[in-house]
Image 1 (cartoon, rainbow, N blue to C red):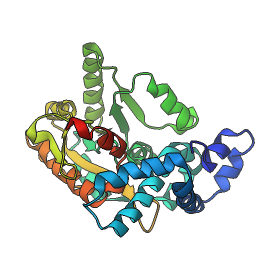
Image 2: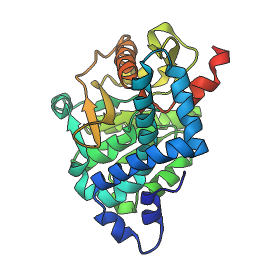
Image 3: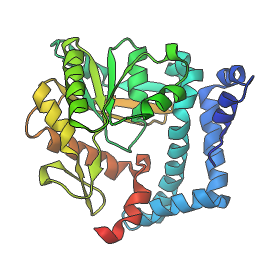
Image 4: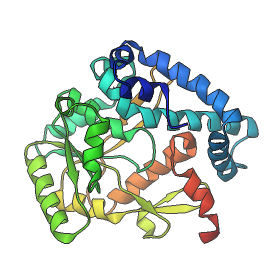
Length: 293
């Protein structure tokens, strides 16, 4: 179901004020019960849940896997709604978001060289990292291949004055990437925080590999090449769920900058995926591409 309560309230004229009054925890509870119902009767939800279940069957006990499947569908719902909900709840973000390991970020910034935060692509709620940190006073940049999507991102995240972080989008051509690299170097010189999410592919180099339940995926080396050029501290960052609040942003201690950076990050990413596969959004593609492995 693409239309949810948050989207209806946000996008329907006259209802935005009502959306602001909805406590985030109420929404998350409503979303959870909605998933429990639609996961049993809605064909699209059933099919998506089946992709997740089939890929992971045999890796968990059936009871645990059914629970993770429900949580997986819930996380997809929250992920889709979070950027829209941000416009309503940014002023009360402490009601539904916490940061763990912020001291690692603060310590890394003391060097004055800026910081790279690295999150997995298609995993967790990493798109909330930039707006949350910017709201807490950090000079934040979000890097990625955005192209024209930068316009739609601004539309999703609310009014222009609510967007207090910067996009570093590139379209893939050589000169655009060169300009982006220069912009990143300027941001790091100003002690900025650059948040990136390297993509992953079915084929690649062994030192870029991370485990995916008996299979391997390979990180895109481009971002790690950029990181080596810039020589700024690199901190893994994961945005996942929490029993106490809805979403928790976890910032890890810095990695060693050099040839081993990608491997160190891949190992941490593998640990998260093995323990919390329900935060991934790649399972449909993994299931459909089984025959190509």
